[in-house]
Amino acid sequence: MSAPDRRELIDREHGALSIRRQCELLGIARSGVYRLAPAANDNDLALMRRIDELFTAWPFLGSRRMRAMLRAEGYAVNRKRVQRLMRQMGIAALGPKPRTTKPAPGHKIFPYLLRGLAIERPNQVWCADITYIPIGRGFLYLVAIMDWASRAVLSWRLSNSMDSSFCIEALEEALSRFGRPAIFNTDQGSQFTSAAFTGVLIAAGVRISMDGRGRWMDNVFIERLWRSLKHEDIYLKGYADGRETHAGIAAWFAFYNDRRPHQALGDCTPMAVWRDGIGDGFDNTAVDMTLRLDNAVALPTCPQPQQQQQRIAA
Image 1 (cartoon, helix red, strand yellow):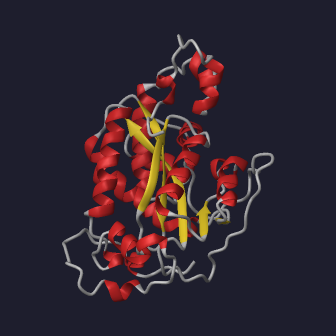
Image 2 (cartoon, one colour):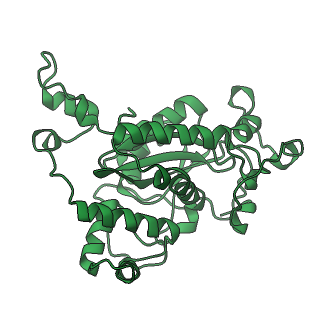
């Protein structure tokens, strides 16, 4: 389900389904229905937006450096508050760090399978990640599933909570529309290590790969997707609510997949490369995409980092 706030779908007067059952079907906690969260503090929201902008530009910033940069800009903030807001946003510095947390009970951590692997064709490897999206009076979480070789966004969902249900919905849509990958790579977030999420992949016969702790480069393509989305759309538009945000992100992803030229793909669009590489019937035979880009029409595009022009073999 793509609606950003599933609580709005609860029908308190429904004659056949109890609120408990509706919450189970929608994958939300009853506490969020009976007791709505208080409105976020305006000062916190402004600060969270600035933290998100700084983190998107420099994802290696931890709470210490983030606090220092904020104070240099005139924000009267201490490190404890920065830490609290970063936890609330679901972000952490990308870089080596000591292992201070443990996986959720019962969540299995799978090994990283992409080391030394040349990723050469669509549906060879998919990846997923979650990011924070600021809106007028709060924020939402966005999950996207991307094909590594083509950079195509296969599915996505918005949610007002960090439970695993919206990630599972995005995964099931991608599998139903685009076939299945050989390998699916994520970080070690609790949404992706949950038995419900990994169970869908296992049932589909997909091998599961997870980044090592502190290895942000293991999922670098989708990190770059977030940067492009936020700088080209989210920060420019300043969406007021969830419905407006959903419509705007849908339009940007459609532009990204089918119209926005990508330098690493010879200025072809991601979905054109995916379709060309897969062919009819989800044929997963290997494809040398460099041979298919010779006749592509080159369009102007924003320069990307030099690393993006190289095919990454993790």
